[in-house]
Image 1 (cartoon, rainbow, N blue to C red):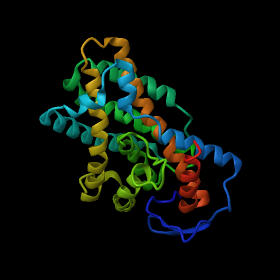
Image 2 (image 1 turned 180 degrees about the vertical axis):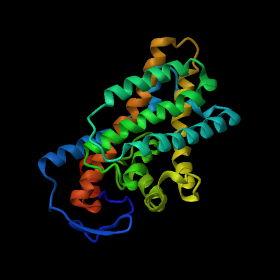
Image 3 (image 1 turned 30 degrees about the horizontal axis):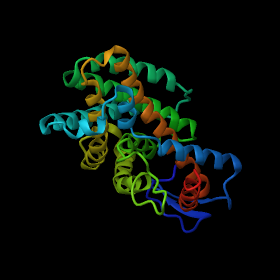
Length: 296
């Protein structure tokens, strides 16, 4: 059973974790094992990697972050609504069929499929977005779920299903750097998890009680809205890059490859963190995160 993101351990070694309808007490070792320290260092690099806007800027030679700020309000509203619809569709289609079955690592396949679909849809710009984005988002969600499974998550658990969707919110961190090198984490990865914690907990209980049969529930609507508001920022950056004249088919495919790879990388870092938190407790993992982050 994964640790909910709003769990508060009693100390660094033992924490009472309240899940969906049950209490679990986990006793953790006193220090990270060498392998887990390596995994945490890798997760830090994955969660603090450069933003999608920076990667797209390098691809097409234009300042995507600046272009994204210039998106007219009506278009921005359309993008946000499309992003929310894509997340709803992904949740209904992908998560309902995942279950707890055995999966292999299919990130390469998912990346190829989503890249081809995105490249085809991207040729039509904003007009193609309502068709391309739900499909791409569903494929990415399946890839994220495979990553979660590889880190020991139980895909039949509602909390894990929502943690998969939560990855789409992680992609919009300002500079995509969750680490304040000079001190405490006042923004970024931990702040966003804390912000979403209550919605995740409430939505997980709803899914446990009623499943996906009522996606119009205010609890699920609130969670999806919080995630889609951030996901829409990244979608805007992707669309802005695709809208640059004469980028060419190869560059168009590269844009979509970067889009998918961005979320796969964040997912690996996110679910590595959750795995370590299940073993060592949230307090200890966060302390080690901050300590190691200052060394990298």
